[in-house]
Image (tube, rainbow, N blue to C red; front, side, top):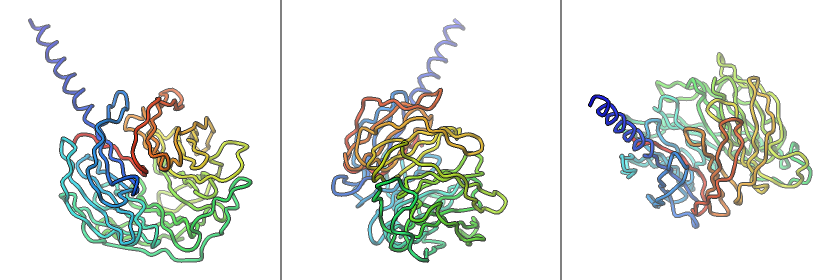
Length: 383
């Protein structure tokens, strides 16, 4: 009788665990007109399959997303001239209730990130070349910007000198264009890239006031003229970051001095396979939780470049795999690191790859998810 009871308790426990594990949602931001706004999908954590596609908001060009660590609040930037950021509360069924909208602090917001403590939302505005800090209230809603900064300086080189032979990957080196902003894992420092000025800005962050102070020096130059710094990921220890250069299609490692919050340039390698010639635009990149596997999206070449990372930041090229789509804009790893999703903007689909637990290599899952002009996907668990 005791054994049967124990079996029943164990079975119920496993059922509860499985039910909780299955309650995951994928949020996909898109560009109009092919994409109609923000979509929600159910995620099967075992198979990685996306299902139950639902349009949950028609916010125009709701292309940039981030979600709170507790899975309760979702933020989306409307990538329009007068940029706005929308905040929603997520309930257990994945239904959204609107909290509020706030001005993005500039035009054309292209990146959102939360500080490690979740109390501030950082925004990069591409069109205006400005960045902003928005306070996050206790209910998850947004306050007016507590700080903004306007990038300023001479435009970067029109042609990327670090690109491969035959490249015409030239875009927007005509003035400031902020492309990403994020705090380091300690939350004491903030970095932002400016593609148009070929700079990586570095700030000290005051969490109490929500303000940024330019560090000394206030920025570091791109690793090559016209490289076009785009997105970056921090190492798990927070002592460095990998940055993808859009026009040059290169990866640059920067050492991060955790005492001063300043960057020192390290090695740069190509994000493209050896021998490739012609035009390609590097886009998103993701790093595995253990910091050992780095994946990069190459647009026009339409590939995922896979690299392994050593403790000193050295990269070893592992594979280049076709995305099975066109113009991969961003990549998303699930929380367990078992599945990698690709947002193929021009082919209007999301493709999925299994990640080998042994060496991080990718295998196409023979699965396509139709969605118009996908830009970014974030995954949240049941609140």
